[in-house]
Amino acid sequence: MTETLFAQRGSKAEIEGGASFQPKFDADGLIVCVVTDATDGTVLMVGYMNAEALARTIETGEAWFWSRSRKGFWKKGETSGQILAVVDILTDCDQDALVLKVNVAGNGATCHVGYRSCFYRHVVKGNAGESPRLSPIGEDRVYDPAEVYGHNHDH
Amino acid sequence: MTETLFAQRGSKAEIEGGASFQPKFDADGLIVCVVTDATDGTVLMVGYMNAEALARTIETGEAWFWSRSRKGFWKKGETSGQILAVVDILTDCDQDALVLKVNVAGNGATCHVGYRSCFYRHVVKGNAGESPRLSPIGEDRVYDPAEVYGHNHDH
Image 1 (cartoon, each protein chain N blue to C red):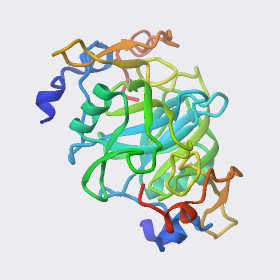
Image 2 (image 1 turned 180 degrees about the vertical axis):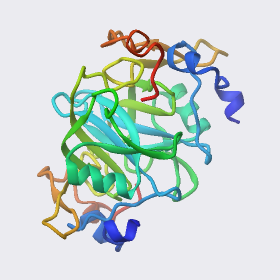
Image 3 (image 1 turned 135 degrees about the vertical axis):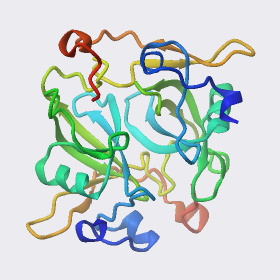
Image 4 (image 1 turned 180 degrees about the horizontal axis):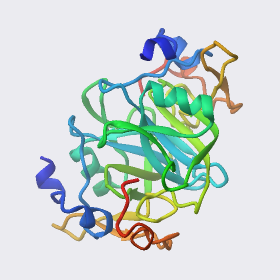
């Protein structure tokens, strides 16, 4: 499937410097995708796309992913309303990662826990001999999924 | 090794809402890590850490990765000087991804191709029936690796 949707991988020089998009999918057929807010650059979430999800994203301008846990296509926001409207897609030097710059529709909470960003906690070094701990970055939740869904919905 | 360095994975509620850092490493023992500029939030690169690289990063405040291609530890900047000084580490709802906010030392070019960011190209939708193409985002390279190394050095 990959072959029919995107160009074959070329030389290192072509991959790093050429104008041909030759995304590298891993052994599971996935490419990692960093989603950032198009307005202020905040990292909102990290997701994975297979070739078909990436093709749909480019074609429609709305973000599609492949859910590794549910093993199925996942149009972000399809049930929750938090559709990701893609403003720009970037790829990196070896074309095995993507950045999606998006505007978030609906209530603007990308994270299924109710925060704007999935990255709502710092990792803090523990005291000597202790494991690292987490502390909130201090942003309030946009909404409480338990109030809307009766439980944390699964993305 | 993972077990000795970080807490075991707990319940979904604990992972999403608790204060215990319980990073999830994939089947290869790796966690994906998005590196952003601590000053302006630009996504600079995406790397992978195993438990030991993550522990070293937290302990030393400088970013260590696991190179999937070379199958070895990789202290970013060790040879090039572009050490990543870690200002903050964030993790996401299911604790299977990290954001590292960093200041880049040396000449400030995180990418081995010579750009400040590895994400120096847009993915542009092709015309009907054509594959997507790449176009430069328009940032100049910080330096030309060929002039410094005689070739593109490998990170």
